[in-house]
Image 1 (cartoon, rainbow, N blue to C red):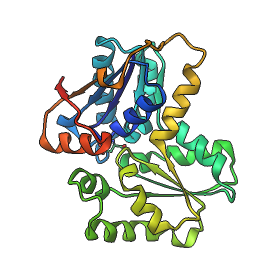
Image 2: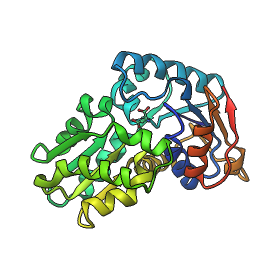
Image 3: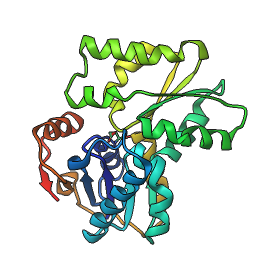
Image 4: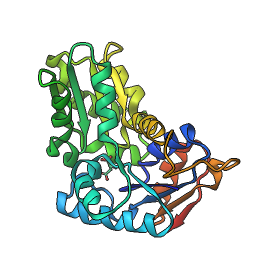
Length: 260
Ligand code: DGL
């Protein structure tokens, strides 16, 4: 069983992508809504929360952990890998691989929460592929709240995006990594703002594809013939109307959220 956790329901963008690519793999999700957001928190706190989330998933049968949250992936992956003896996937490496592959000019932009951008991990991993690549990163902390409010197409959201994304104007990036669970929901607005010549990398899609490749010849999580996405379990550490709303927007179907 694949266990996925996030600071809240935004990580369901990853879960949805995994469900679509690996429909017969049972999936267990934990959204830590009671303590969201992680983006403005310290690395130490995010690490502690990530350990607790992982314990919950393992207790409930997970054999692989996917850290869907970019903030937790950035600061807690090393600690989780030391602490737990099972495969731990994160969302940064797949997004970096996809960005490096797709960028023709080697000028890559990254947007994310403060925790993600301050960690410098995207930059570090991109430079491990190619030290000559130019990486420009920008924290966009207001975007998570706008998505959670359902302001996906509001004038105010467009204004804030314009302000954040104008940062990239002088860098002539050809690729922009959406380094946060919530940003795929704004991808149309973001694409419109940066123009069609800039390719967006959706870390949720990249992660699901990476996971699929890794599971092909593996026995850690095996498909169960006949298993359907509707049997997957979605747990949250608090039940709120906002969470239900975001979950429904992501899946485009009602999702039953269970209290962890
Ligand atoms: N899940 C977080 C991320 O991808 C965004 C929300 C939060 O700050 O907790 O970085």
